[in-house]
Structure formats: C-alpha cells, structure tokens
Length: 141
Length: 163
Length: 89
Image (tube, rainbow over all chains, first blue to last red; front, side):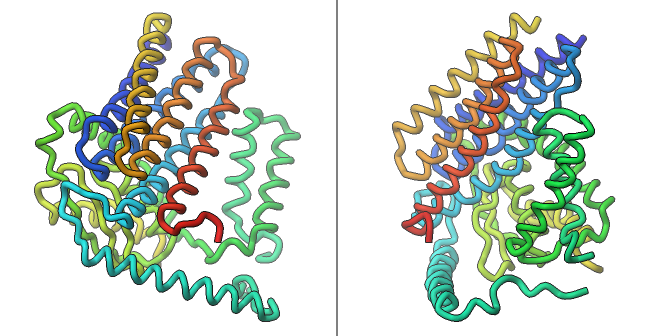
C-alpha cells in the first residue's frame, strides 16, 4: 500500500517537473513561460519531497519531517522570484503576446526610479546626520 | 513584555523550524530551539518595520486550506494548458484593484495569486492600489477579478484587518 | 513497484534538466535565462531527493536545502541587477 503511495507521489512529481520544463521550451513569450516553472515545477518537487519524507519515516528509524522544510521554503520563495522576474521583464519591456498596459508600466517605472533616487539621497543625508532617529519608532506599551 | 518578547508568534515558529531542521524532538533540541526563537527576534527587532496582528486566526487557517486545494488544482490546469496547443492560449494582463492595505496581507495575496490557477502577479503599483496580473488563458478578465477578490482577498481582509 | 518507478522518474527529471538547459543557452532575453537557471535549481533538488530515495540515504537533504537557499538568493540578486543595474546599493 505504502509502496503504491510512494510510487504515485514520485511519478506525479517527476511528471509535473517535466511538464514545467516543457512549458519553458514550448510556450511562446516570456510571460507565459513564467507560468510553467513557478507552478508545475514547484508542486512537482514538493510532491517528490513529500514522497521522500514518507519513505524515510517508513524505514522505522523515527519520523523524518525535515523535507517539509524544503517544501515550505520552495512554496514561499517561488512566488517571490516569479514576481521579481515579471517585474524585471516589464522593466525591460520584453515582447508579450498579451497587450501590456505600457503607459501605466512606464509611469510606474519612472515613479519608482524617482522614488529610488530620493531614497538613496535620503539615506546619504541620514548617514551624515547623527543616527539619533535610527530604527523604527517602537510604541512603548 | 514587549521588550522581552517582541514577536510572540515568531518564537514558536522559529523553535519549530529548528526542530524540523535537526529532525529530532530531543529535550535538549527543544530548549535550544526555544532559546534561539527568543534570541533571534530580540536581535532582529529593528528589521521588522511593522507589528503584525492576526485578528482571526481561524479565518487564516481556512484561507490556507483553500489555498492548498487551489494550488493542486492550479497545477493540473497549467499542466493541461502546457500540453495543449500553445498557439491557442489567450494570455492577458488584468488590473486588479486592491482593498487591503496591510503589507503582510498584500504580500500574502500577491504570493497566492502567483501560486493559483493560471495567474501570476506581475506588478504592484507604487501606491498599492492596483495589482497587474498576468493570466495564462483568460477569456473574461472581469470574472477573474471577481474570483480573486471574493475567494482570496475577502478572507485575508477578515484575518488581518479590523472590521 | 518503487524499483520500476524510480528509473522512470530519474529519466523524466533528467529530460527536464536538458529542456531547461536548452532555454538557458537559447535565451533569447536575460529574464528567460534567469528563469531557466531558477528551473535548473529546482530540477536539481528533485534529482538529489530522488537519488536520496534511491540510495536510501538521508545525507542529500542538506545539499537540497542549500541549493534551494542559494538558488533563491541567486535569482533575486540577478533580478535586482536587471531592475537596478547593481546588486548592493
């Protein structure tokens, strides 16, 4: 029974990993390609990791749960890297099959650049001052 | 109390991660985990810009359950789309207006949109009012916005913001 | 059952690695290559974990965890580079 569960998890995970990479090759533009690895591959590896946790727990040397940690980590980081990649692609104005609301994105990019120069300016200004107002203002209870 | 235990939730979470990392529940490891869980928030207090309050933990739990089911469904849908004819996909950028304001709630929403069916959050506007979402195959953008707002944002708003 | 399934899984993940590598070489744009690298990291984790099951050795877990950490940091640093032109301000 356990054998079948393990086999299913391993096969399902490997198939999803494969499909994710297939999407990377097959799809037509960057934004659609981004969907494959972020979703399919993450769940694929998650399922292989869970299979590994079940496998080592069933060997009888105690429950092995540390694979859950890698799974959790992957599930937390995958959206972050996908978001950053999409942001970088929008920043570079890559070609897309879908219509990009270009004006809005350009405005946002320009605003962000202005914001950033201001922030760096502020940071250098603060560095010159005495660091008395450093750190967040903690409300005393 | 605030000074000694700046993030009461973070301590058990860090201790749990320590135990998972060491893969044991020996008493020594539990004590060490608790000490680390107490020390790390204390030392990193200045890196946490705002206090996190969870008003309804049960709603958050329900949200996580909904999310887990959706992640599995999402992957099957995306897998089918990838295996189908890539020329027949209709990708689209959709603008989703946001109601939630808390930083943590927004980042949770952005992450869950990326993990769920055929959507990927691409850009958050600077004033945090709009989210640009890329959909892999979407014929009806309004329906997508309604789904995101009803299925995810409503629960997050309940969990993280005072009504 | 597992003995039959494991080689198939190895094969599938290995093909996935090759496909990602093709995208890494082919490009055409920088974000494409970063995405391919990110996928390669994740595929490598899958391969390592499968190898761990195959050899029934828990030693590979730490390597998988480290690759996950380093992969994420690498992707973020490269994206930051594309977005801002430098990594550390």
